[in-house]
Image (cartoon, rainbow, N blue to C red):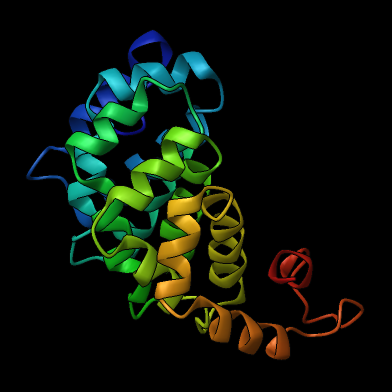
Length: 206
C-alpha cells in the first residue's frame, strides 16, 4: 500500500496509512519518510495539512518506535515551514508541547527532528508567539540546549534567536537561565575549523 501511494492522491493516501492501526512500525515509518520527501512545495504542504497529518504526527511523537517518532518530527518540521494555515492546526493539537517533551528523548535523532520543527515554527512572528504561549516550552528549549546532539543544540539556539526578538520571549528565556546555558554551549563549541564542528553553531550561539 505504501509503495502504491502515488499520483494526485499520494499524500491523502499516505495520511490515511499513517493512522491505519494495523500498519507495521516499519510501514508507518516509511509512510512518514515518503511524506517528508513529497511535501517540498507549498501546495503539497497544504494538502498534507488538510489531510490531518499535523494531528496524526503529533500523536505519533509518542510512538514506541524510535524511527516513527523521528519521522513524525520531520513531517511536522516540513509542515511548520509551510503556509500560515498550518499554525491553527499546530495550536489545536498542542504540537509545541509535544515537541518540547521529546527534546529529551533518549534517541538523539528524535530530538534533532523535534528541534528542527520548533526552529521552523519560530521563523515567523506567529510561530514564535505560539512557542512562547505554550506553558513551559521556552524553559524546555533552554534546558535542552546542552544536548548530546550538537545538531539539536544548533536548531534550538537558532530558535531562541528568533524567539528572543520579542520581549516576552526574551523574558521567558532569561527566566529559564538561558544565559549560563548559552555560555556553556559556547565553551563547548568546537572551533569552526574543527572537522567535528557543526556549521553555524558558534555563530548562532554568539
